[in-house]
Length: 353
Image (cartoon, rainbow, N blue to C red):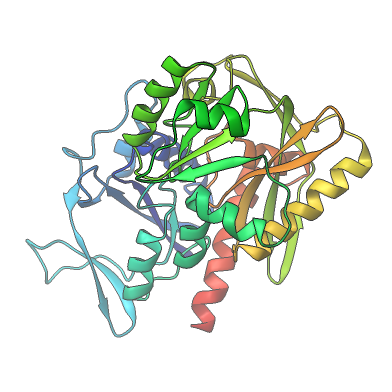
């Protein structure tokens, strides 16, 4: 029987998304040949041992309150095995616990901090290592790395302290533009800008989430994506899906709060040569950024056939309506099998360790 540690929650604005992803995964693991330890992390970064029935009660409408649920715990390494310890009863540890499956989105979960902590205590985990997560989560770093490798991207400006004026941005990129916090996911803090008033508001909104800001030229394009999955030493890429937002762009509300916020078309209706080119670019991006186990890569396709890399997500959503599992379902890999394949990857590394 495989032992799995599901880690969820976290301090970011994507806390509730993480809870729903974890709930979906836990429902599947309960039916597999696994023992599952549930570790929730509060918005104040307190670790909690959470009862299964509590996690199963969570939803976007009524998310689980980790501040009041579960028992505060710490992770402790003894003889190269990791245990969960209640500080009040240190002589009765839980475990040893198995490989970790982190489903924490946003800062702390996707930026390499959590991965660095798990490495320090010797707990193997699913997904990219801390260096890769750091490079992929920071959109500006991702752009710099892939620019040096010749990966096509939309024109953009990156800044931290010295803020460009609206006229400077308009002159360099035209209108509209998209203003984004460099390090945030789920489209949180992203705004579409068409005039100076919107520009001022967008900068203020993005700065809530990050000091570093990315401004991208707005292009008329289709939004296409594919999923990547490692099994053993083999790296596979899925077919393409297309996102058609029913909002002005694929915002947080369109992704998670509005049931009709976007249409996901799988497979995307795209010429075969375009599919192949995007798949090749996705594989190149995955390798150049040092990713591991799985990711979702997003691209733009303009009317004249130009392809632009948009972003790569090392912790794609794992709700039952998330694109990553839906893309693999189209390839014949069901949700449960997908999760177990990821756990197998980490288990193999743990044995090597």
